[in-house]
Length: 86
Image 1 (tube, rainbow, N blue to C red):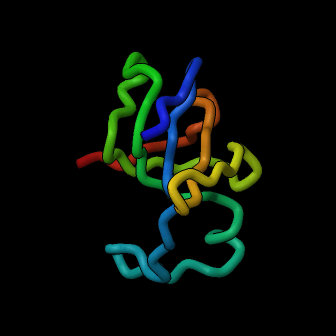
Image 2: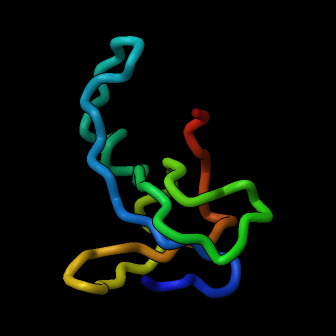
């Protein structure tokens, strides 16, 4: 597995639900401006972001990387806008 360096996280992009838990239907613009991803590996945990967290960041942030025939993204911790609370 890849280990991110610096203040980065390795994520795999997730598909968006078309409707929130409260019943709000998301339009296509909302789905394309923000990326939802699952954290695969972190360089450190000082920002309280850990493996398996679900995070959100702008679609223009991060670098796409292919490894073991899968597509991942490397994102700087400062570019993460939010994470889901469990």
